[in-house]
Length: 477
Image (cartoon, rainbow, N blue to C red; front, side, top):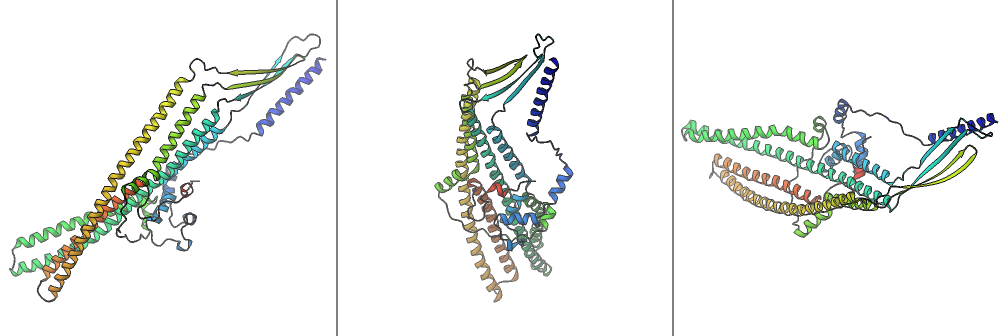
C-alpha cells in the first residue's frame, strides 16, 4: 500500500515539474547581450559620416528630396539641415530617451503578474494506510481598484509625448545652430572679399602718394597715413582669414560632419537678405504660443502631473489580492480562497497626495513662467528685427547714393576734371558703404534667426523641418 502511495506521489511530482517546465519554456525569455562602448570606434564612426553615401541619399528621398538632383552639387541651408538631422549625434540622445519613455508606457500598461506558490510535505507517521504526503497549490490574483491602471497609463503617455516633442525641440536647436554658423561663415567670406578689395585700393592710394612724395608734391605725413591705413586693412584681412577655418569647423560640426568631409562639399553662394513682410505683434505672439515646442512639452508635463495626482488619490483605496488554492492533505482534498489587502486607513496616502498636488502646482507655475518668457522674448526679438531691418534699408540707401557719387567721379575722371587719387578715394568710399550694408545684413540675419527661434518657424516660408520629425531623425541601429 505504501508503495502505491509513493508511486502516486512521485507521479504527481513529475507531472507538476513537467507543467512548470513547460510554462517556463513557453515564456520566451530574453537574453542579455553586452554592448560595450568603444571610444575609438565611436570616433571612427563619426569621421566616417559620408554626405554622398547611399544611406544618406536614400534618406533624402524619403524626405521628399528630388532623386534627379542627387548627388547634391550645391549645398545650401536645406541640404545641410537634412544632413544634420541624419548625422548629428545629439539627436540620437533624445531619440533614445523617447524610446525609453515609450518602454515606460508599456510598463505602465502591464497588469501585475499572477503569483504561484506550492508546498510539499512528507509525514513520518502514517496510520491506517493514509498517504504520508501533503501538497498544495495557490494562485495569487492581484486586482487593482479605483482605476489606478488608467492613471498610470495616462501619466506614462504624457511623459512619452513630452519626450517625443523633445526630439523636435532638439532638431530645431540643431537647425538653429547650423543656420547661425552658416550665416557667420558666409558673412566672413564676404567680409574677406571686401577687405581684399579695400586693400587693393589702399595699395593704389599708397602708390599714388609715394609717387607724389618722390616728386616733392606732398609731405611724408600724407604718405605715412596712407601706409598706416593700408597696414590696418591688412591686419583686418589676416584676422578675418584666420577666422574662416574656425567658422568652417563650426558649420561642419553643426551639420554632423567632420571637417574633412565638409571640405568636400560645394556650398551654394550666400544670398543677400531680402525684404521680409512686417508682422503685427498679435501675429508673431500667436505664432510663438501655438507653434513653440517647449510650450507643447510643458503642457504634456502638466498632464503627467495631473495623472500622477489622480494616481495617488486612487491609491487611498487598497488593492485586493485573491488567492484561490487547492491542497491534498493525506487523502483529504481541500479547496481554499484567501483575500488580502493593504489597509491605508491610518494615513490614507496623504503624504504622496500632497507631493503630487505640489508637483502639479510647480508644473503650472513653470508653464506660466515659460509663457511669459516666450511673450517677452518675442517682443524683444521682434523689436530688434525691425530695427535692424530699418538699419539695412538706410545702409542700402546710403550705398545707392554713394554709387551715384562714384559714377559722377568716374565721369569727371574721364573728362580730366578729377585725378586718379580722387577716383580711387571715391571707390574706397563706395566700398565702405558696401561694407556697411554687409554689416547690417549680418546683424539682420542674426535678428532673423532670433525671431525664428522665438516663433520656431522660418520667416520667409522656405524649407523648415520635416512634417514627421520622428521619421526624419534617423534611428541609430
